[in-house]
Every structure is written in C-alpha cells, then in structure tokens.
Image (tube, rainbow, N blue to C red; front, side, top):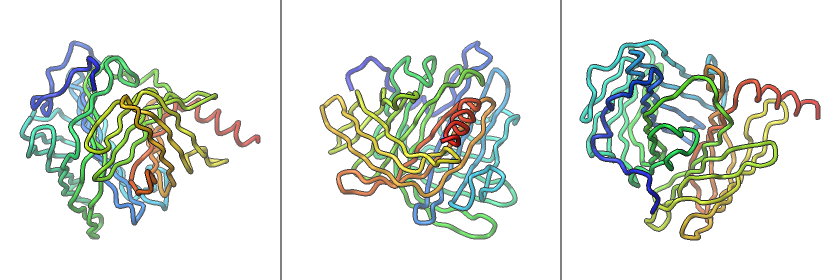
Length: 312
C-alpha cells in the first residue's frame, strides 16, 4: 500500500489523548463466531473521554431471532464510568470487557463478564498487520481507523452452557469525532480464513452498491481494493440481506470474486440509524470463508425502502 495514510504503532493499543471536540470517540471492536451453530457475536466498547462516559458491551445472536431483546445475549450500555487503566498493556472497561495485550497490534487476551449470565475468554491472534482506512474516507473522514482479521480461539459460558470458539474474525480500532446524527448508508463486508481475507466498504445508492475502498490479503500480500461492486439479495418483507456477491480488483490487479450465503443476523439499533449484522459463509476460489456484512441505514430510509418493497 503506497498511499499516504499513516501507519500505526504499539502506542495505538492504548487510549489516546482526546481532542477538544466534545464528540471525540474511541472504539474497540472484536467479533467472533461459531459458524456451525449460526452464532455471531461482538465485543464492542466506545469511550468518550470529553463526555466522561464508556458505552458498549456484548451482543450474541443465532438463527432463532433478530431483535435485540430476543437474541441469546444483548447488553449495550450508554453511560458508564471511564476506564482507570488506559493501556497499552491492559484495558479494563466498566461494561465488562478487558483487553490484555500479548504482542503489540497483533495478539490479545479478551474477557467479558456480566456478573450473572455470561463469561467470555478468548484469544485474538492476527493473521495480518492492521490495515488503515484511507485518510478522509467515509464513514470516518475525520478520524483514525484500522481493520484487521485474526484467528479467535477460546470459549464462552452462557446460562451454564459452555461453547468452544475457533474461527477467523475481524476487529477494528478507531478514534476521532463521531456524532450521533448524520449517518449515511454504508456497507461493511468482510470474509476471512488462514490464507485469505478481504474487506470492502460500499456506498449504496438506489442504483448501485459500488465498493470505494477495502483490502485483499492473498498469497501473503495485502493490497488496497481500488474498485468493485456488491450485489445483494434482500428479504421481500424484512429488507435484510439474504445473499450476496462481491467482485473487486486490488491495486496489484488481482481479482476477487466472492459469493455468500447467510445463516443468521442481528438488528443493532443506534440513535438515528440501524446496523443489520449478517453472518455469511463465503466461497472464494473454491474455498469457504466465514464473514459478516454490516448493512447500515438511516432509520427513516430503511423504513421507506421496506415499505416500497412491500408494495411490489
């Protein structure tokens, strides 16, 4: 990658000194999956140091339901204390999440506990270095952001039942101003295995889902995606994704052709937007990858699109 986007260092495992912007927000996201049981999950923490709050928690879904109150586990805090440990070696958050660094930017021990129903113990081991989002690119044009896939192993115990985890999954980090209004449609779609991973960002419109950035890791090389298209099948009544194809080309001229089937999803509400997270099984070059699609909509636009589809 030969663009002028800044790279990241060990200090970026810690909380950063915030700007003077009241909406300065720092996030820590790790996903994990149990594909054979259609289980998807997020560990997600956001910290607003100027506002003095920590938010986020743990969301775990399966094929039985999509609503936050009906999925197996959902806790999303909005007004908790700031962490006393700022890292980089260890971060402990009031939402129940702890992150212990084993190797800077590459390996972490993750725990989550809600004191009653669930305990999560995982290890994240990256299969590629952090990949920066292009400077100024949406959806975080004023912030710093990177994405990274890795192998996630360990287990969780939910309501007394232990489940083993061994998957390839995505994490990201971001810091910069992030308001709660003004969200546009975004498609954040990825797939990962030991040998291959890809991520695409799309800017959906009524006419097309064009890929405007992302990356492809293949044959040990990570390269920026320079163009592509995301084609979706949607449920005729509910509007969520039921199938997908992605075609894209990276800066080395390598072609990505990926087809996905879906198995489960969760509707994640925001203040003025929703994100529908769908667990995907990809076929790429005859090989199966696990992945996810995050289909972000302003709430009023999603409602209008579903109502319009229902008329036809």
